[in-house]
Image (cartoon, rainbow, N blue to C red; front, side, top):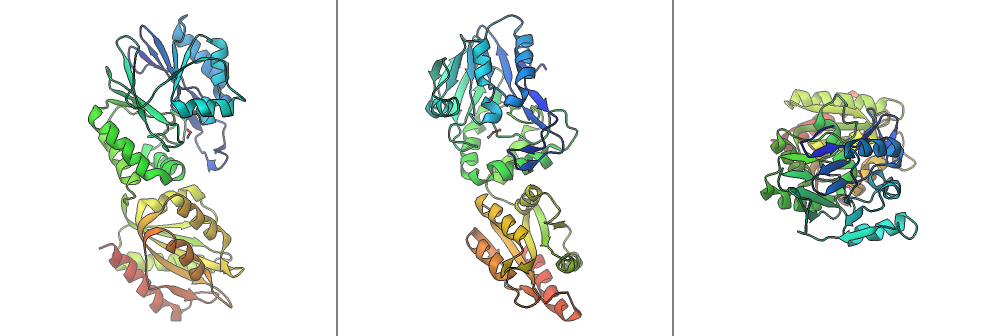
Length: 387
Ligand code: FEO
């Protein structure tokens, strides 16, 4: 695939992978991106997952047209990008591997001792001339691993952005970029908002014209839109005004209460109310929706003296991903000793800047008319919190 006269896409689409990182469901596969810069010197930007190795080696060979590789730039040592490094070096042993000090530490760890190759260690601001193209390196620690760095090619203003601006799905998946980029961001990079903010500040003055991430499509248009979303997400600012109502129901009674509460919130005047069944929806999608909205209602059955396990699992995920700066309302169900609110509150209180509404609701076994005044009070409170 041609990116420009001198830059080629040589990555691969993995249509068969079911779970990325063995945990994130994939409906439209995954792309492992890699690029070639063909100048007086040839630079290969990253390797691919071992799963795509054979196809990738063929892509590289075809685009090289008989030339050799001078440099292999490693943005990120996670195996979805470095898994085929040994094979490319076996085929092109004269290539110099470009990375930072941590890159080479991780190389040694992943490849039992080390791979025999010449290394060029770079640090923040170093440049590498390829001829008319020049790569400048910017360290991006924890976006998403400590060794991550991005490369800016100054003649064409290309940003090789590593995991940043990536998404789930193959490069040819016909789907909205933001939907799967958002799920990818909050579940994979979300914990590191401060570091993403740092990277955005570094790239702001560069006048980037194209973003070439390690996953998903090359971004060539409307970059302000993509960068603005990344800015919002990494600053933990809500993207959408609205209420995400999430329920974990064992026999359906908590679900009924959640649906009724959602309708009450709509009736209060809320334009955007999104309801999800935590037990049946993709957990990563629920995490994404929690971050996306400014407010959330959690409705949960009591189980073994705490919250129903899927809800505890969800809250654990929110906590480790750095969920913060949101308003949350709580509804519990329990037949003899409702405990879900207490349990959910414990998780939420451990997070930063969470406004837990005082208007909690506790129902016994199933919602009754007598529960509705408390539910109306919660609906009004969550609506008013958004004004
Ligand atoms: Fe796409 Fe952090 O690896």
